[in-house]
Length: 194
Image (cartoon, rainbow, N blue to C red; front, side, top):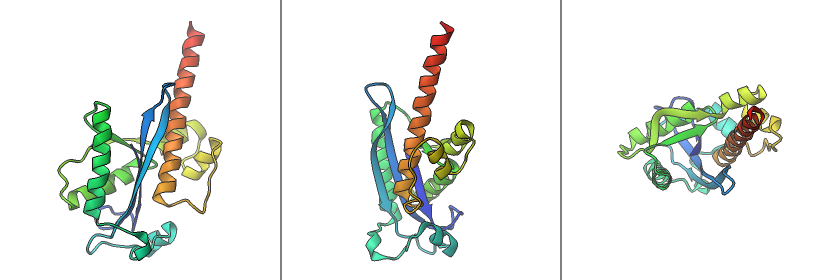
């Protein structure tokens, strides 16, 4: 499951979790990894959370705007976990691996939110992640999401960047590209060996 968060800062214990978006990935009939469905939540800042003005300037979120239709953190985490648990069960897995761009950051915010709301059924592996920063560095010599997407020949709209939905969909598209490219290369190497 690919995840992106937008936050009120960098400290997952003190700073507000403001948006979460997730893309469920599935393998298609050709054996390629594909984006299946996107989910997203706008989240109310938890009580006494920090909202760094610099972070809000970057992500453009107005945390208390009624137009956000934000929901309590507990409800968002419960809904996210329900979606992920369903995918885990469909795939006969024990845990989901969070895929992200700087995945430990996203996982840290998810784990802190789960602790705050006392969620007992967190479906994500507590420390294993797959990170498109590393994959982008290996495949394209780039670590910035926009630059990796451009190097991979994908479009990039800077005006939509830093919304959880846009960033998670680009991250998911890139991750699928990395996996499918690797499988194609692996098949080509095996053909050359024989």
